[in-house]
Length: 244
Image (cartoon, rainbow, N blue to C red):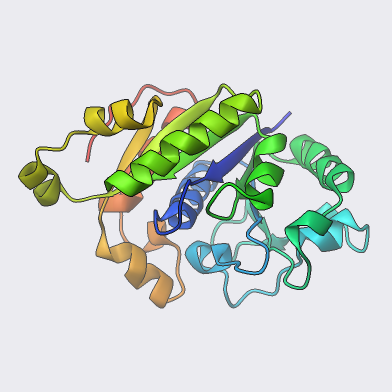
């Protein structure tokens, strides 16, 4: 059975979607069969970070309602083992049939090694929809105090939902700024109250790859791309040191 991973953040602007895309493509590049679902209804952007903005895609609602099968999910043009379902545009998160959504995810577990749910920022209905069925939670934060505080609050809400496999990814870390502020990753972990899965450096290639419509891992092997590969290996249970 495949593992369901929800990628969440307490606030917007943390780079959650780029982390989700980077880790998912790293797993696909290693031979894993991966499905990505954009759960940010109305504000979908995961296709851009995946390098699939020019690819025709179904929404997960099309599959939930039985109009199409999961086998018809769009295939990535450069990572054949990665499939994608986008978010529907013309509906409210509250209108999603949770039973049908859960049934689709159960089917996905039988067909894929990893299923990633890229949730909307914040802790509203989309957050709960993605987190509800997840086996593992990746909570993405930036290093700034507001993002860390919101990550801690999101972690508390997840624990109230009965989730205990919650790991923190600290994204967009600038070594120079961290040095000037005398800020360490341990400080961020302590403030958020969550164990660490990985750190991702600030990297202009994230923006450049999205601008040119290609996956980050095809644009570079260094910086954020290398960090996403390390996170992917840890998800697979490999011991990889945390580094920038």
